[in-house]
Length: 206
Image 1 (cartoon, rainbow, N blue to C red):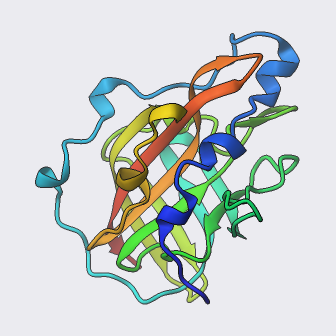
Image 2: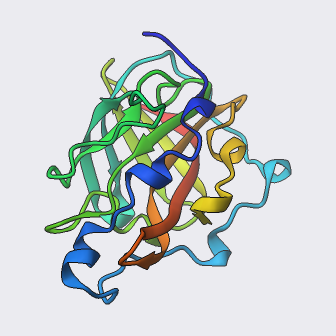
Image 3: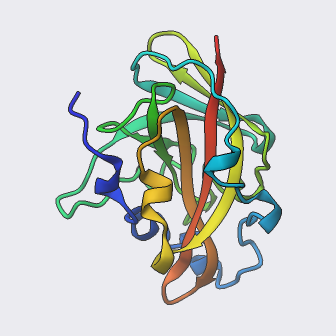
């Protein structure tokens, strides 16, 4: 598997995932997904809790986030010809993807998982991602038969024009995970204005 820096996909999910098809079809923001509060923001690198020992590389097959009722298969995502991160097919609302040229969830580094917030039919896999709270649990089933267990450090929302590329995609010296979907304000003309990003670190495995 060829590995490339995660910075190669910086800020592209803000473009690819964020049309807001359901809200556009309904013509209303009444059903807008939940957004994280300021209380769920991170404390910065200085306050990082310790992580569990890194796992060997292994592709992930499934992600579970019990607090927001996510239980979804994962497909591999690459880059498009323009350098944007590919996204799962919009019609498969309970499907997420991981950036397969980067870090696998559980090994040292920053693993990236992305998925739609909605599609034309309604809420999709990460519709409730903004409702996740610090301390929440994320489990990733790995192809080697193990499960990587992550704990949420922060849930933040960013405007697409000020997306913090290095903070989200930058290298880490411990096993970390980012889960990304659309968020922020929404308008019929441009769709969602930014992204919800969950920051988590490895705290166990089984």
